[in-house]
Image (cartoon, rainbow, N blue to C red):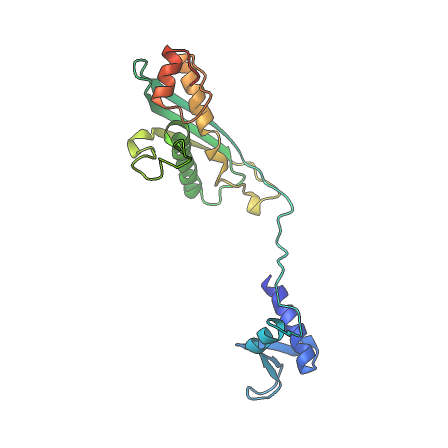
Length: 224
């Protein structure tokens, strides 16, 4: 985009200075003819170019650089996760015991950062699956708008996480890499729901899977 904007500036200046674009250069805050002394009159300031391309009566179209770096192919990432939980059958409370997260990252350019990203995604998935909820009253006003009401997992709620990095380089990613920012967030709630189903026989149908919802599903047959 910057190179395109530069070309537009030189093209516009060539019309004003009556010189070919390849004979011009941008020097500081102005366009000048190459090889001319610094105090030569054959130059055009960027400020002047702005006045010629904007405002009422502008003689030229605005300079707007167009980028050419649009992504033409995708390098999808694939993630699988396994959770182990303990469920208190009397209260419905869910405790995370162990967690395994794996993802095909293509090529781990920074393995430590990739591992940290995947562990962080697990924490976010636990929040999504067990804690976080937007609550509105009958008037549509949000009643969980502060950290006093909006539940988040604390450090002790995050179990030991085993990270397995799989590397199958993508021909469409930089240096074979695949995105690891979002894919490991997605399976978390489903992995936890499956673990709860294995422990209780109840299939959660909504998130977050609160202890109240789970207790009612176990004891009253309600949908968790």
